[in-house]
Length: 510
Image 1: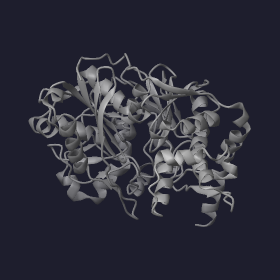
Image 2 (image 1 turned 135 degrees about the vertical axis):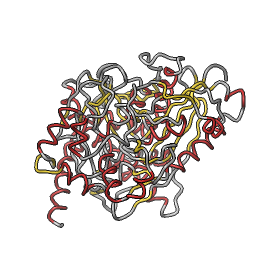
Image 3 (image 1 turned 90 degrees about the vertical axis):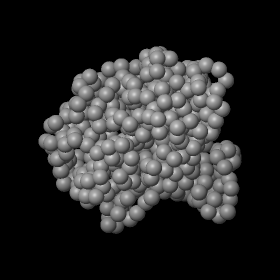
Image 4 (image 1 turned 60 degrees about the vertical axis):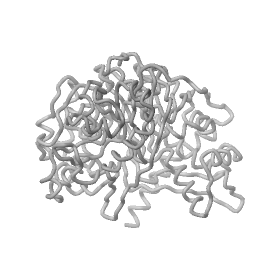
């Protein structure tokens, strides 16, 4: 191994990945660990931020155990989950658990300050947020505004001990450098910046006032992709790296995915089949579709924006199904499951799956929505069930895709696939059929975000150009199969109706 290296950290909801990425954007070594999320009936969904750090440093030391490798690491970059809050003290150490994007304990607090009859919001608040930031805090409380309001009203001991409320990527950046920082991008889920002018590096006083917050505990905003600092002596020792190693701003997984997928030109589209799922592309304008929870947010540091939306369950649905089999003593893996799915024909012999295991955000916002598996019979096979899950996730993406195309005002093709689900050629083909678009499977789709954040860190260290994205490489291309079109049009078309029926049933049985 020769040449410069970047230590890339991807803090997913399921746990962190740490990788060494070389100067050709190839992931040359990688390690991953799982973390637990702690749920409770009151809406709690938390993780231990100290555990993240412990696991990341253990993995880093393993990757750079050879001093000749450690000397080549020039920069560190962090990407990962967003819409979460880590309260920390002045030294960047957690004063409480991370409230993840699934934590809804702040719902009452959020509704109190912005709730109303206009799409669930007070009209004045909704108009101000859409005009200034392009989106608004969720009345469900599942974002930083709800989380911070909950801390401020219900957790006085945590508040008294805290200096900053940070996103996970900004928390890790502070653990690395000792410097509190954030960007328009890392704070996108806070919706507290005036995104009409991306050079305006301060929080919007009008929006802060609307929700009753100050910027006292919000980290100073800096430029996307800039140098935050170098490793502290403690962090350098913990990671096994030199203290002179450069650390770039933390970035959301959305942004890292666009870069790692090679989808950085205007309207270059990628679709993530990760734990959650989304569809995005760079666009030249700030815009919001309130009804379908689609917006454009601060982009890749080039003055443009990225389309944002989110479906709460993507490839996680297959993990859920695998867990059901494992509960019966099975050790079936991803490859075995997708091989079983291949034994079932398109349409899964009529079995249907709606993938709302954790509710839904886009294109219909209902956090209480729940999944269903229907049309089972005595002749239904395991392969039918697995294929139905793959098709249900793909159909959900297709439902959203139509609204994204209307949002950007053009046909989007090809669509670049990344994420764990994109490792399956069968799933890629199903997505192509459901979208009725050509789909490109990106090489090493599972590590696209690691490649993307490594490129940002390398550019901060002066060993790459931020506006020259890394080559992603293509593994395969899948065109929609004409013979399957009617089948998938039926599945996709039925999904919104199933969503509406499920909602009506739930309302009738409250």
